[in-house]
Amino acid sequence: MNQPLSNNWNSRSDSYDIIIIGSGYGGAITARRLAEAEFTTKPSICILERGMEWIPGLFPDESEDLTNHLKNPLNPLGLYEYRRYKDISIIQGSGLGGTSLINANVAIIPEPNVLDQDPWPSTITSKMLAPYYDDAAKGLDVTQHPKGMDLLKVQALNKRAAQLSGSRLELLKLAVNFTVDGIDPETGVERHPCTDCGDCVTGCNIRAKNTLYMNYLPLAKKSGVEIFTQVKVKCIEPDLSGGFSIHYERFSPRHNLPESGTIRANRAVVVSAGSLGSTEIMLQSRDKGLKLSDAVGTRFSGNGDFFGIAYNSDQRTDIMGFGNHPNDPPRSDVKAGPTIVGVIRYDRGKPLKEQIVVEDLTLPRAGVNPSRLLIKDLSIKGKDTDPGIGDKVRELGRVARDIGFNLDGALNHSMIYLVMGHDDAGGTMNLKNRKLQIEWPGVGNQGIFEQINNELFLHAKALGATFIESPLWDYFDARHLVTAHPLGGCPMGETRHTGVVDDCGRVFNGNGDKDVHHGLFVTDGSIIPTAIGVNPFLTISALSEHIAKCIIEELNK
Ligand SMILES: Cc1cc2nc3c(=O)[nH]c(=O)nc-3n(C[C@H](O)[C@H](O)[C@H](O)COP(=O)(O)OP(=O)(O)OC[C@H]3O[C@@H](n4cnc5c(N)ncnc54)[C@H](O)[C@@H]3O)c2cc1C
Ligand code: SF4
Image (cartoon, rainbow, N blue to C red):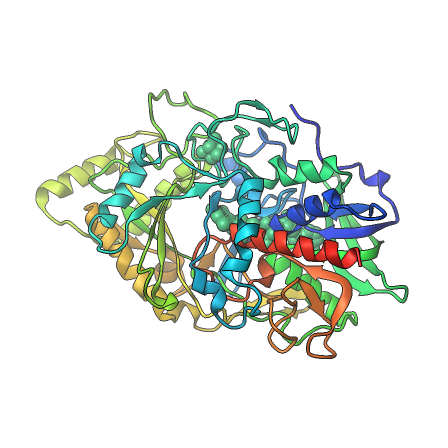
């Protein structure tokens, strides 16, 4: 078992040369690269992360436990965060390693022309980013599932793919370890091969998921980075000597009220608190006097995320995750697989606005029972795609058998789909009563979502299932969207007129078109100025690898 990565809070210094806010892809990658870089004088570096440290093995895997780990004002250290705004809701993680702790591991490169759109800076191109994608893929150790095509859910996804001309099913590269069993010589971290247990999005208890906690963060720590958890940064103020004061609140599980304080960054601050977190910090800082571009808070995107369900089909899918309970109930050779394994990339030659990707989802163990009840209720309003008396009898039989982890039940003959497309990144974030708000009137009516919904119906039909539309979009709250991929808020741009940061993540200071605050950087999902139409962490990681290089160059000047 490994030692914890975080340092004792009482051992902190009053100031560091470089302070990194947040420990997701932006923060962890920058921390490691800066700590390993050559400088004439080695800088002191620390990470401030609002969430707790989660040692693999301690992630919840029972449904009762999930609610106890929801982040909310009464539970500020919760691991899972669901934020609901009027037009769109957001799911994200909070902990050392950011949303990597609870994501679905998919590492995918967007179509090359995604980066050719406005307002991406002209220097950021797919060719320019290619070596950084390679660095990130290596750092996260991504690979395909060695037996992905054997998984029943992938075969079910392939049923629709086989009907399409010009689009086929591919196995995705995943940040999952399928081979190493033991201590990794580079990081010193204990790793074990994936057991196909399906619990990636509640947290991997097997030590198979290549979260940032398993790679970039231990390497950062090894090179001298100090890591402090439970520290929520509120705002940043530049000071007269060229550094920055960082105002924070520190939460302790034993005390209800956080402790407030200030810590100083002498040379640089890297804001990497995610799309919502970084934008909130920048908006709060602007209210305290930090000069910024007017673009702060703009270009929010949900990455075109959309969901749908094919319920009670004729095909067994094994989408019920079993977590770290392989024999509860006893099973032989059942493989739920990592949360996502396959993808269909549609219409790659067509204009971006028409391109979508469809992926399979496995339910984590803790989600199986609550989902069964919800999906069964939703199916009353669903569309049966293969009527007929004989089929109806078989469907009713599967519903009757749908208890616990019965493999012959309706839930184990269902598919849940995650789809991404290209929304218009037209959301805006601002502060109301000092709290972050997102406004995006009518986003759910954008044509792309109707297109996706129609395609998902055809997936359900290919399986002889009942089609259930994305629940919040259709059922409870007309056209409400849910995203696991919030992007934008501090978008990259050529100048301060379109961007909050430049092509190196430097923050425009609101004066000349390209003038920047020296020593202030943003790198995470907030700098992505458009939907990218595929799962985003590899792109966030590639940009962070690039920005880390820019920071090293700037500090070495
Ligand atoms: C269920 C789920 C599944 C997903 N699956 C995939 C997938 O398969 N592939 C993919 O590409 N993407 C996936 N994503 C999205 C992906 O994980 C995110 O896009 C990515 O983690 C964003 O990286 P980031 O560095 O911008 O932010 P994050 O990873 O969210 O990191 C931000 C960090 O900053 C911390 N923070 C926030 N505010 C503050 C503050 N004020 N002070 C200090 N710290 C702060 C947060 O706690 C967090 O640790 C998924 C997301 C979810 C929720
Ligand atoms: S399927 Fe299970 S073992 Fe494999 S990465 Fe996901 S949580 Fe870990």
